[in-house]
Image (cartoon, rainbow, N blue to C red; front, side, top):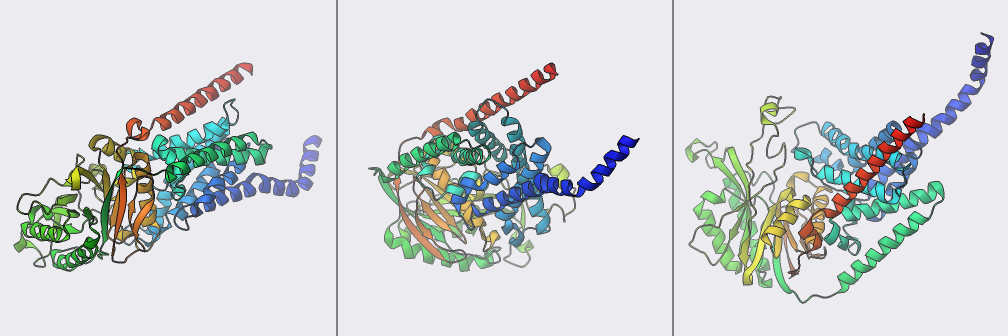
Amino acid sequence: MKKAVGYLQSMQYRYPEERGGQFLRHLFFPTLLALLTGVLLTLSFPSPDQGWVAWFALVPLVCACHERQGKPSFFLGLLSGFLATSGIFHWILKVQVFQWPHFLLLVLLALFFAAYTALWCVGLSFLRDLSLPLLLTAPALWVSLDYLRAHAGFVALPWTILAHSQHTNLALIQIASYTGEYGISFLIVMANIGLSEAILRKKWKGLIIAFCIIALLHSWGTKLLLRGTKADRLKVAVIQPNIPLSVGDSYLGEATHLSRLEGLTITVAKYKPALFVWPESAVTDLHRRDELVMQLRKISKAANAPLLVGSSDYIALPSKNRSPPGGLIFIIPAYNAAYFISPENSGGSLAKPYRKCILVPFGEYLPFPSLTKKLPDWLIPKLFESLPGNEYRTYIIHKDIKVSPIICWENIFADYVRQLVREEQPHLIVQLTNDNWFGHTAAPYQHNIASVFRAVENRVPIAIASNTGPSWVIDPMGRVVAEVEGLFIQGAAVGEVSLRNDVTFYTKNGDLFVFMCMVLVMIAGLSTAFLRTQDKKTV
């Protein structure tokens, strides 16, 4: 009893000081470091688009998780990922089309993305004790989780992955033609681990190795960028009409914006592009409106080049049942489509359209409809549903040049675009999009930078025609060679790109690099399990 009283008395005098020190060391400083990583990751993407920050953005988080086990590491990763996602996706708070409370939607998205960062931090706590070098295993785990995020069924969203922070680092991202965008993420994490080990353990070997590898790849990429090509060249025009959502919702407003599209097309026709690209949903119901088809063919003939036109195709009520007269009441099914309009086929039937294959969940369709349709409208809005397309489409233009369209967010799915290039072998990919919904935010730029990586991965130029911008023409090396600068302005840009015939390692073999990373993670996991079994036997 006396011993117990003495112990309590001693704790009474030491408690405030010790508790304060433990609070700072075990909670406050690690939390501060985790939050710092969240801020730095936010700065790495548009906007403000400071990609150089990504090379040390993870260091505070790695230091915070140093010598911590699974649960504390999970909490720190969750906190850091939540802040980073909230900062990168802050534009959700300004998107008027969302019917949920904007803050709630952002919180759910941030928690979803933060879970991947949290799992990575938990992995770090186990990987540190292995004989395998953390310089390889930590980046391999990050890449594996990134790949999972891109293939997570209806919640798959490879938007602003770590590699995208380097979209202006053209020399380095050339490695994507072998590894895909995941190779750049691997290098960024490797540099962060090397720097962290130098800070925490005074071990410089990892940092030196990482620096040498990155420097060599940067040098190799620079040589590729400086090397000329004898490939044929093609001019392509992207049209940015800046059509407000309210104008494009009915046939009545179509005459106004069609006149605008025609004017922009004819204005740049003097530069003699081989193709004009109009944005997603530039017209409505093209598949069953012969008079509109004839009008577009006249525009194509006047411009002396074919058009690729985005169309929202609906099954609608008969005209007499519409309210107001001339308006359009949408009912399912519907397609988000792209049509090829050629001046050489003035009287023939339309070529088969490309129909968007990867639809946006909760925007263009409802996952698990038997369940979601029963939920209240304030939780899951009951919008009209689109039907997905089921095949790629290729059109032939000037001198047997093949062109394949993609629509909206299909550009963020690397394996979808890779499979398109592998099967159809297009000389040019055109991306039709309408980012009107995002307003004056960073979202349209975050959307576009994924196409820089699709171009490099497959060595195929990509022309992006966006309704409200930005509209870009990207060459096979990832350079933006022409653009309509700014958001919510009218304009057109003509870019000249080289047409390469070589098939990249990535196009041919896919995400082989990712699978190698997964194998390394599996080996690390088995090693961890084996060591734990041995420890139990020893005890």
